[in-house]
Length: 357
Image (tube, rainbow, N blue to C red):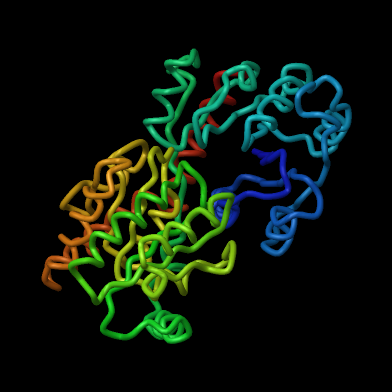
């Protein structure tokens, strides 16, 4: 079975877990290849990891019929299935797949417009929550499988020495308790909520610090918010996007994901694998990862006081209780490994080919 993984872009934030999953699929006997734009992190990462990579940039993703380079390239690769990431890839692969007789499986990593997916033969959703949204938008439920995104647990295994080194470089004391938030600085990730929550925590707990790791259009707003709240000494922001967030996670004591609506939450899996007790919005796909009080804590989306309450709650917990939370988190991650998800994906591939033959 030969699978062509097609992403109509040169960048992909979750390229590392995706490539790990591709390698696991190869170990299960499938042939894997990548198709992406030239010159970006996807091409470099695939080549570095030994995945056969083809590059091509469409004339326009909005009109698949004009993307004449795609059928020529796909004929030369001759895949049994094209697995797409991003809506534009789904539109192109679905349109030409019907004409070439090559089935398309399109992935949903967030809520998407159905018009780009109408020609796909099957669908994979990153969460049950997204699946339900797409069903309500008109996608047939019997053609959607839920296969969550994966995490390389070993890659994120806690390295206290590296964490200590980062803390020292940032001027964070060994006795200070550090909360971390990681992600794009945009409205959906809601770091403004985390900053306001942290200001409530800092008012009653002088031993706390906050690290914000990422970049995006709201960076300036967050800097001004931090200054206005008098938190400049207590809040550290990375200089920009961070390719390797592991030292930041290892340097933290707790993780907070305040997203107003998170389709799934790969960053949450990474934080859990780093041994961090986590606090997250009680929304979207995060409910499929965390159970409040069992392997993490939930707070009301968009409510700084709810997050502050949860943050103070974890600060006041004894070490044994926190250790139990972390232990449950690590056990939960067994469901999200590349091995577990590759097994589910292989089953989907076989069912799709069996149905269409």
